[in-house]
Amino acid sequence: MVSWAAVIGMSLVALGMVLTPGPNMIYLVSRSISQGWRAGMISLGGTMVGFVVYMTLANIGVAAVFLVVPWLYIALKFAGAAYLLWLAWKTLRPGGLSVFEPSALARDSRGRLFRMGLLTNLLNPKAAIMYLALIPQFIDTSAGNVMLQGFLLGGVQITVSLVVNALLIVAAGGIAVFLGSRPTWIRWQRRITGTLLGAVGVKLAIDAPAPASA
Image 1 (cartoon, rainbow, N blue to C red):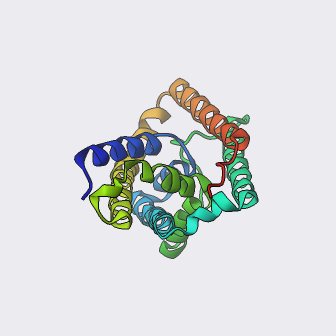
Image 2: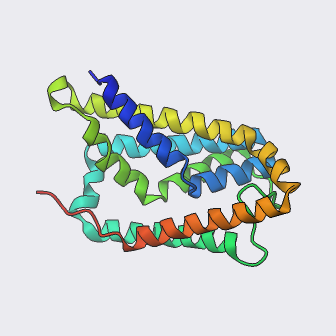
């Protein structure tokens, strides 16, 4: 029902997105370093549920609200942009921390770890727009059940994100130790990450909303 070309295309898009620094990566890495890889995996579970929520909403058409109610999209877009810019400031400000630099975070329960992972993903408006705008490009209406294709392609995106983030969580401690012994490297990593977060936040704030379709 879904062609290999569509699967490969969706995989590449998903890989590019998961490798771009963002709120999910910041949260998962910081939690893994401060509380261990198990805590990171629990947080990742919440993040993945967030993707499932967006995928389901997109495939049953509820996410189309963002197209027909522009002010709602704009409000969420600016909220997401403000969050990214806040993360960028925390990273770039004097005394700011790198993504891979250990910080003193309170140890959270498993339930809170899961909820925070879920909330971090649900507060990212680009996730909803991604499912609404990208997945349909890989759907072939002549190949059968369109909704099923949407779920299958969404499953590809979630699988790619799950694998890459899981590897990052397991490696986060080692990366932190490596960078910790190289102060110059960690300063540049912090500057690059903060700049990327700021650039994404600014771009998200100035991007025009998607036009409503009849």
